[in-house]
Length: 294
Ligand SMILES: [Zn+2]
Image (cartoon, rainbow, N blue to C red):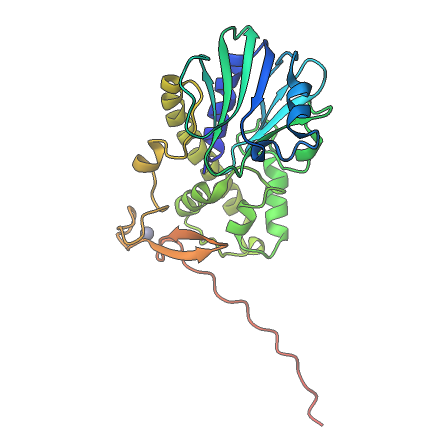
């Protein structure tokens, strides 16, 4: 699944390659990726045709391209989505779902949405140029210059839910994802089940700093693969092989203490952690109601 740094790489790529382009033709090859657009396939195509792309923006893992009429082309890559900028005569990709022909600033190029599993998709957001209302509830991500660190720390420490669950809560902080959460927790030496209200402000702040560092490192590496492929996201950038300390390393020695990394089930996924560096929280003492002895 593309994580936030990769989505940011795609955003930066779109900014470089399709800014100022005019959409001349839209071809929907499969209905599922445009299912969220209530106009239907033909309406989706009509709403885009003739419009000029003014910018490339992102909130969490959502991308949008503001259009010259105040609407926006809103996209999410889901589990396996890719946005590619291709010459029109490039052979169609196996899972090509939507092709958007461009003129003007991107003369002779096509923006292609390729998605094997089709959890992602595209839609036209009415009036969404500034911020699509569909995603206005999603919190900013740690790489966003306007992310509020103090508010994050305050909110985390008010909640009793586990810190990993909180890191994955898109209403609190967006775009962290399972892999970056595990990596940030390992770096901060915090177990994912530790309740937010049992973190110190310093710990919460440090954890945020680590999450940011992990994401920035991934962003740097994703940028390398981007230049070779225009806009490409496949969820398997070189970052995953070279720089992970916990995620995907079950049974391998912790790089700090040598203890084998453990894997446990977590919300239909997995959590990887070092049981020594990241000790499990002690259970809260159960409050046993006293029964009057009479
Ligand atoms: Zn360790």
